[in-house]
Image 1 (cartoon, helix red, strand yellow):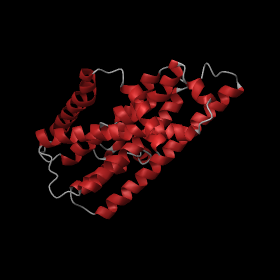
Image 2: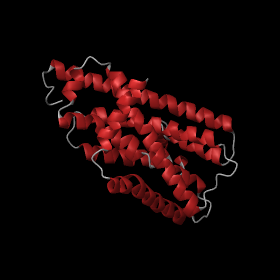
Image 3: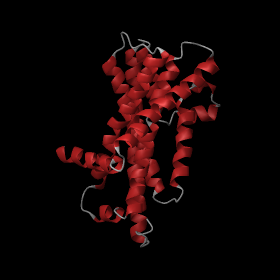
Length: 259
């Protein structure tokens, strides 16, 4: 287990190690805080209401996109661009073990970003957690991050075989935001998009957090989180399966350098 977390920590440092403290603060604190203020003001204008707690929570959860989706999505692509992917493929280490270890630290980093968004909601928009079951609320955050990282793993594996990674990541991020129900009810979506939104693992965690914050039925919240966690794990397995398939094709076609 120590080796698992050590590998995760080293991989995370490789992603953020190029940042100086000023850049890290701008990227990890100022940027998500400003995003939170912007989206919340838009929601307040649209709904013409002071009680926008559900949408504050939704937008806070969606701040995880930069960490859970973008960071993990870029992870494998950066291995290919920097020439280390061949070493990973050739190493005797269990690939699933390495895959999960390298992504897992981003769960905590993404959760920190969500907490920044919630602090902005408390300070500027009167978000109130009085009487809220905080441990269960924290569990909903972690569950959402697991789902986001699962999506990031799928995107990262696909990024191995496409050239326009940033375009792909941004489109994927906007699709997730649209289908998650962060800023509006998913019931407003067309029937086919509503059905598609059920496949996004972050949606039920957002709903669970709203139930917990409203002091609603906690058993329903736990059920939603359990479903989201299961879907997130399925995404992780799909991402690893795609990774294995592309590795196999690269070996068979002798295109490992292109891969």
